[in-house]
Length: 183
Image 1: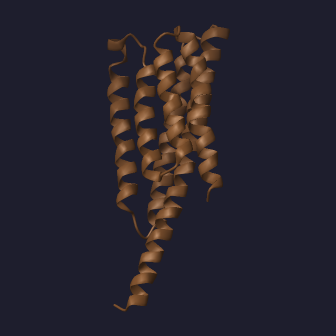
Image 2: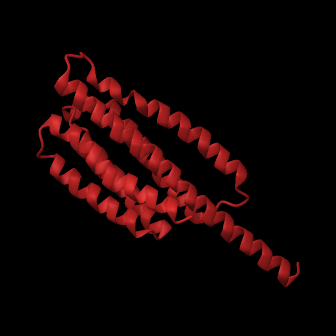
């Protein structure tokens, strides 16, 4: 292989890695909007209606999972190269997802006070992603989510629901739009 060809391959790998990091904004925005909307909808149904099952608002998560899987496969097919850092981010979020489902199946054991615990996990995964991507707004967003997780342990349940939208807007949506703009 010639030195020129080696440099061309390296340049293509770097370009693909940057493009794939940009795709992370899609997932931040998707999940930011789904979680913020579901939290706000749950709050409205819980506090302002007599609907018997306000937690059904979280059914939006199913849509997010489907869209994430489809988009993940699309991105994977278009990418010529998956860097070690991209794999780290992927496995961090897989670890989050496994932990999330363990919590969901044991929600009664923690008296349905799941929001602050999930926020601790979200903050850890978001912080790790921010470090790997070297993207400070995501790191600051994670720090805000950690602070809000601490605060949520002291909030009444209805206020926890309302704070979800605020926490996710600051911790996910703002960094997600900033990452998208950084293309």
